[in-house]
Amino acid sequence: TQLLEQSPQFLSIQEGENLTVYCNSSSVFSSLQWYRQEPGEGPVLLVTVVTGGEVKKLKRLTFQFGDARKDSSLHITAAQPGDTGLYLCAGVLSGAGSYQLTFGKGTKLSVIP
Amino acid sequence: GAGVSQSPSNKVTEKGKDVELRCDPISGHTALYWYRQSLGQGLEFLIYFQGNSAPDKSGLPSDRFSAERTGGSVSTLTIQRTQQEDSAVYLCASSLGWGVTDTQYFGPGTRLTVL
Image (cartoon, rainbow over all chains, first blue to last red; front, side, top):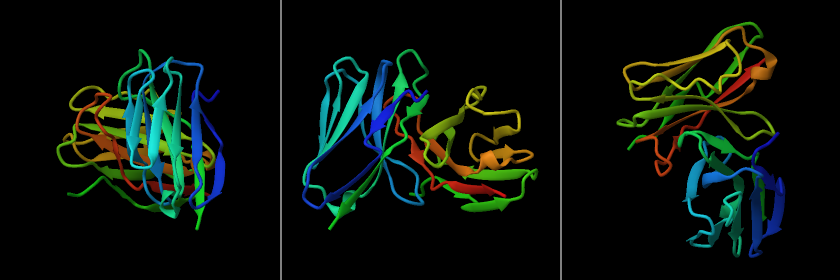
């Protein structure tokens, strides 16, 4: 059973379009993180959200943590080819050690020029 | 400064052989993690080292897997009697501390292929 379900698994869009990636669970997380990974490299942290209902913005990227801390979303406005990559959500289960990250399978995004 | 480095970048081995994968964390980082990323799967936690504390080995999939960290720095992940299902990218990460706000910095990974 996958604790963190990401959707969609694959997304191919035209430059300039908007998109949203979802990360859902039936479990409560004390924090949730979003990473971006490019081929041949390790994941790079984009953001950490820790409070239910929290919204964080990073340029054209908006991250939201659900009120119940069971889900999160990543919204990209006016996607650019440089946004292409694998987006991973990861969370620390409530009550677990703060270092124990549970990862989703990822959303592979392709932005076509 | 230098990031997390891993070696080798690629390793092809025959079923039944032992392999050693190396991780050099960022200098001064006290926490070190190993993960496995299989095709179509998310990252799977394997083991965690924090300072001089006993490591958390709860993610190791079998007793063929072991890891050590010498001098609080370099770590080696050893897989004995490799199986084809061990084929994956093995990622190492390090962080300054172990709190939820401590960023884990990942290395580029070692791609292991077991024939």
